[in-house]
Length: 321
Image (cartoon, rainbow, N blue to C red; front, side, top):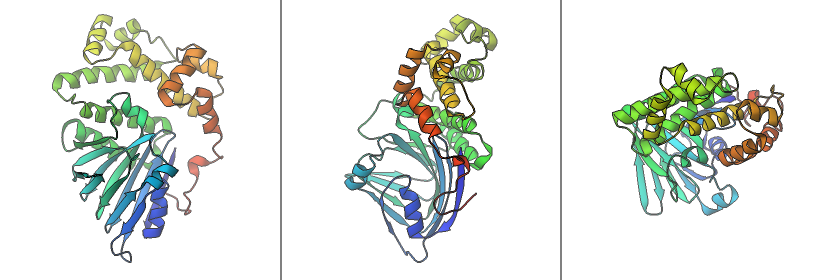
């Protein structure tokens, strides 16, 4: 888990910093007075940023930028706190006023008009959304964030970022997982009261599974008993919600496995970790790769290849939080 805070900087420094996330060409109004600051939380799965920009900026993501860094493995969720944004793909212009959010893919050329503003930007792995929402040529969804599930998701984003480095990577990822689920519910229109109730039941099951996988019995009868339901009641509610207990248990087991693979103190072999999470070794490897795009061994190797002290490393300009 990494947190850093970059104090107010000018156009050149901010362009270099922004290009570290998504390369673009930047144009600035009144360059002499333009300045911005940025704070960021980064885990192995999610990035959550907040910038406060004084002055206008126009960004171009060109075919050259996409050829160099495609950006097709994630979506960005942008939540303005101040200032109205506009995104243009070909002849389609999408406005994102304060009180709203946009989920956008940047794998095709586009232009962004970013006024004097403050906003959160939440980078989400593409697979976290596409396995719940039907994929499009490029994602460009706008949500209202002042009421209902949108307000809850926006509050969670602000609260998570306000915690700075006080959240562990596991805690930060858990919060981000829930935010993504809420945004996907908004995307598919599951906002009616009965849908919210079913989602609440599913979330209770997820929390229980997350706390007990590898520690106690997480078969359906045991989980139903612990939550005060019958197995049949759980099956019916989850079926109405479009999922199954088996799917929820598999999803949470893979998340627990991902967190254990991220932990540098963990000494379990891949086979031992698979058994702890309720998989056979061969099935675990295939399921993990299908969900996260790499095998468990490749994921662990990439994490251990990071230089010592990465979590406390400073960004390129040497600033610290």
